[in-house]
Image (tube, rainbow, N blue to C red; front, side, top):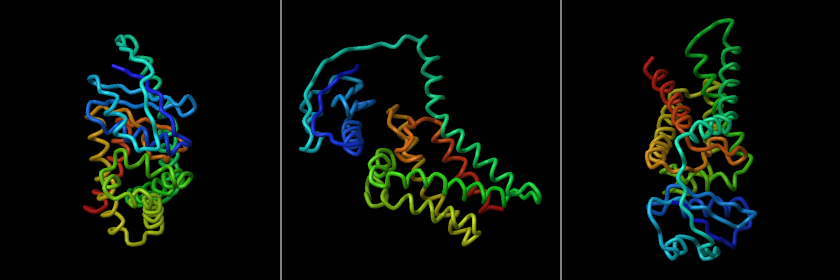
Amino acid sequence: MKHTYKITGMTCGNCKASVEKYLGEIESVTNVSVNLEKEEAEITMEKHIETKVLKDALPEKYTLSEKKQEKKEIPDVAFDGMEESKFQQLKPLFLIIFYITTAGILMNYKNWNWSAFMLDFMGLFYIVFSFFKMLDLKGFPDSFRMYDPLAKRIPVYGKIYPFIETALGLMFLLRFEINIALIITLIILGVTTVGVTKTLLDKKAIRCACLGTALKLPMTEATFIENAIMIVMAVLMLIF
């Protein structure tokens, strides 16, 4: 069931992200898509939710009013196109991981060593991903706390997270206090993975903040796999 609402008071991308966050946290809401230019929000819900409940979930600076209501059923044949669209949306993520992997191989191919390759991969991973987050330090925390449990409870964590990633990347590349960097990696990515898993199980369609707000990537299984790769590498490095 989808409903379209008129929302006023939004002035920038941060406002859009905030509205999506607050409405997305309402029980029975499965997806929120906000169009900043049209000042509209399309909300998908499991059952009808009173307009007052939606209004109360938003800060006072925003006003919400119902525009239209419609029910849509998507035929099974439509899923092929949806999967192709999802792949296209995730293409930047796949390309970045491909280039990071290639760079790690080139850095170690003359004297191949799996440990050195994994450290370089993890270092480059953090540096590249933190770069994209740095492009919008104001907007990133709002997107990040939509699914990261720690960022939800401690807002300042979302603000310093890009800098934590940069520091970890440098520690891996410079081979500085590797064990400490590995333990921190397990903690922060473990927490994020818990949030990602919950989002996937709840089937909520929200934007992944792994590449900041510069690239609009959907939260999918690929995000889980991306974190899992880093966690597995960290565990292997600590064991061996």
